[in-house]
Amino acid sequence: MRRTMIVLHFPESTSLNKFYKAFLDAHCLVQADTANLTITYDVQYEAQAGQIMKKFEKEYDIEIKDSAE
Image (cartoon, rainbow, N blue to C red; front, top):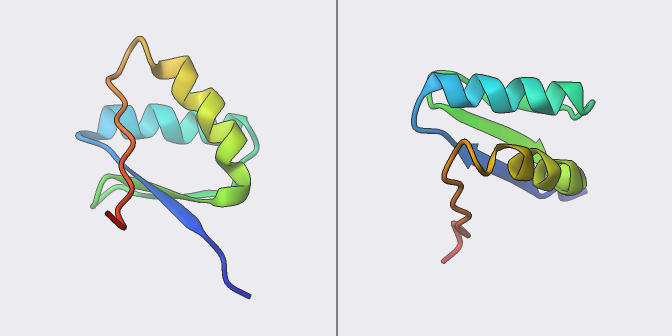
């Protein structure tokens, strides 16, 4: 079975930690990579991710890019 995963990249650990906690509070299974400053989640959590990004949109500049481009 093929799965689609989404990777979020962060400029520093403070924002990564805030988003990671928000994902956990939303009961989403995510993988945080503190060395590469990324959070990876399954596409099934896309709705929750959108809500989390909306929560932080005033605090952070969020940019979405398709890595396939």
